[in-house]
Image (tube, rainbow, N blue to C red; front, side):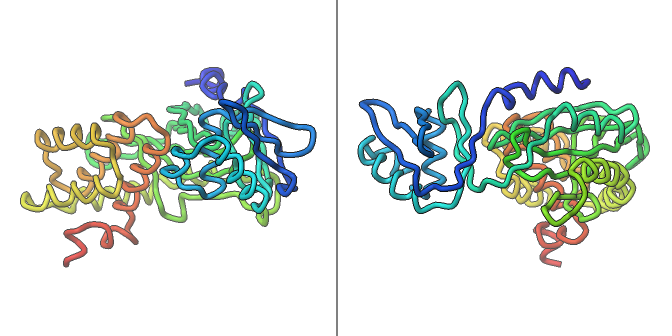
Length: 322
């Protein structure tokens, strides 16, 4: 994808507004016959959508299993009492209705077009591989360059980075290494410190300097990642242990049933003979079977933890017993 195509995919994140509420003691929720109305501060009122009600339940700590059984007048009282005792928050509105509530008011909006421009100037011949939508109007953009390494003969991977940010500034930007396996287009990340970077208030410097430096470092971390994968390719998994290893990975990734069934079917045809092969079943799921951004990142995190030299023995059931 090019920059224009990425911006098209990000458009839903740009069609919303955000309002910071620094004095929640003045907030209140009222109920009409069929709708809740949030009044975050004097002079402002917004109807609350179904998604907004779900967000209010999470923000106020009311269990969803309880909240869905409460009548609107009861929710009015519960929400008003709890929201007034909460810390400052942000109201996300779309077309004049509440769609999300986010704790905290420290925001760092990242204009997507500027972020993409910085990335293009940092990685030569960059290709934007995939755009994921995450909660709280956040996105994860996978990108790759031209630098390649072989894991094994005929198994090339390409260096890249994953950039997570919010155009509204609802989260602090994060960057980590992203590696694309060219044979199957499986994408993978790492949990190692050398490939993970988060922007914090104490970092100093501009967010653009952070983005430029962290993307460059993440892109340049391909060598130690590939070296670890090469070692995993030499770690044979005995036939009687392959199902156990794969099932442990499936549990850690918390794959939905449809993905679990597809991964198991693939494993029956091509049993994972090495730790590297086992990891690739989960990166296959995250790249080709999952579309929900939260599920993709969770599965990739499980694969990265399994691949990590520091945590592999802890999460691998076979290694754990040795």
